[in-house]
Image 1 (cartoon, rainbow, N blue to C red):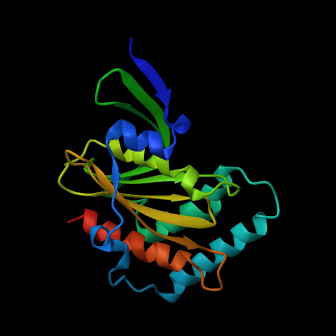
Image 2 (image 1 turned 90 degrees about the vertical axis):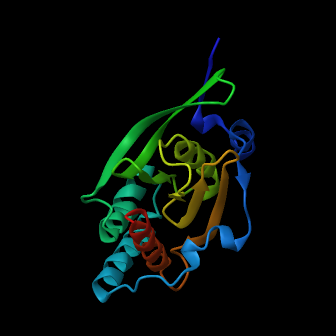
Length: 209
């Protein structure tokens, strides 16, 4: 009998074991977030400063993750150009992926998935501000593994709780490998959303090649 497991119930260790995933920690595997990044104009910086100010003011209250999306993700994705053609955003998309032995199916929902011609994907898992982005990482990796995409090219994603952001690179080979960027935050003196938007813009260019 096939067992069904919810993606949100799995730890990072369990995800790595079930999908034979290996984390790579050498910088050369994930250079994209460290490359020369696109410059931001003053309008983009002003928009990001407003988003940060809105979010930090709302932090005084208990926040649902939907508010995270509204105050941070929507402006960020719009400025990055990921909410318009040829990108195709999907919200709360259902995913289903079989573990290698075929005796287990993992199900879940992607908060926001943005596709380019159904080939490249940016997967975003937004979590309540009370949780670390580490909580979202296992789910994001499952969703990225479930993407029907050319195994030779990388899939990029990122996770956020509104305050903190981290990018993921996954290459689906015989032994799938993934790596993580540094973690960026909006609570430092310099608005970390600047760097996040710069990286998103660069990844957008890369997946359109």
